[in-house]
Length: 323
Ligand code: UDP
Image (tube, rainbow, N blue to C red; front, top):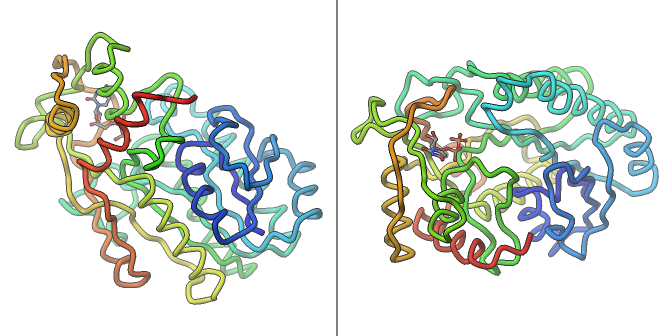
């Protein structure tokens, strides 16, 4: 059985839907940002906090857990600057408890959701895993701290792990039964689609004076189901002992500016976005684009869905958002 912590969240719920096809799955989620309706009915669901050692003990004692996949983190850069305690408490202290209880119960396979935010403001155009990790906000720091702990725990206790550094997760399941739903929403693609649905007056473009061709920030958008399939491959590689301590970027390898994303949304929906230039948002690097060559060479994973597919799947979800 696989324990998915944070399996009711945006990325976790898409992974669970795929994982239940081949594995028994138990989800632990405190529903602070996740949605109970997003959890596939074939998974066992436990409502609880990953920092609660009693709940963790109960799970490890009651079920034959062979690996843990950990998605339960706060992930908003701006919020992490304003409230770093929240980030260090949940993303670091609670994750440490999870690792401790795991190791005490001799569960030694761990898949960790990390982030492009560990790279801070990279000095290179295309970021690979050898690019120096140097976060510029508490969110990025909280993820890098756990990455460092995992390496130490590998050396000392033999913990096996795969770290997956996501670039910009976006899109929705092709069924349109699950998708992205944050309250409040801060991410670019849902905000644009909500504007097109009349749910918000305008889209603010955060900065048009960046050193990029059109002045707006460039990001590498990756479909949430491509992320899910990378996790499935990483899990197989861990369980088969093919891999035991790895870090991989997950991205498309292609960057799109905020203006290009808006144009693509207009093309897919046939509607006109009402957008206005606004001030820069604190903590935004101009450009974050991944090289995902390493995971392609080693696990034969590559992103299969492009920006148009991401937006058309997200559009179907947002038109009939279930939660
Ligand atoms: N962005 C924007 N307007 C918005 C939301 C986001 O211009 O209302 C920009 C943001 O500054 C960044 C890009 O869109 O350059 C992606 O932001 P998002 O919050 O989706 O993801 P992040 O890159 O912060 O993880």
